[in-house]
Amino acid sequence: METNRLRNNKIVVVLDTNFLLLPGRFNLRIESIEDVIEKKCKIVIPTNVMAELNRIELTGSDKKAKEIALIISEHYEKIELEGPVDRSILEYAKTNKCIVATNDVKLKSDLRKIQVPVVFVKNGTRLGLEGYIE
Image (cartoon, rainbow, N blue to C red; front, side):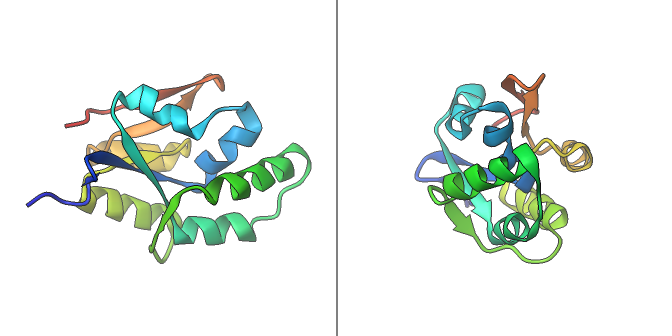
């Protein structure tokens, strides 16, 4: 039986908090994830990521990045996850065999250990992919 990895024939990609902040920091488009993975994807945002994004206090250009992230997040489906953000994303990705978009070094490392593909920003200019998509 197929897991949640595919929804409507699209690969599920879970965004974490710092990835949501990237469009405001580096002028990147979230939709360009499809260009990197070369497949149609369904981008989802955990509810605990939204809670963290709303809770964090940022200043200067990061404050503007947060405002942009909140606007962008309105366009994507939310999935119900609870507890610490990184741990819940790790568990969800492992269980549902999906992709995670993050620039968090520790989370990226933990995901690679369990063979979960990761989309990340390379050199602040473009997205990259680590891992294999089945």
